Figure 1: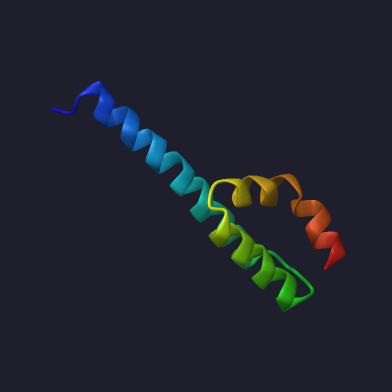
Figure 2 (figure 1 turned 90 degrees about the vertical axis):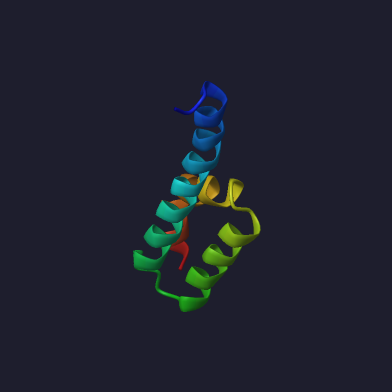
Length: 67
């Protein structure tokens, strides 16, 4: 029904979208001490929708310790 190109485009769109959604939900549920830190993390994810979630997951422990 779908061609290989359509599946590839769907994966290229859906994988970053799923990563972004997972990161935003995780940031909302994470126990930041400061609401400002949580808001800044989410704003960065909106500004950089592909790089933001990657950076969030790489530096998550450090961010939680700082706030």
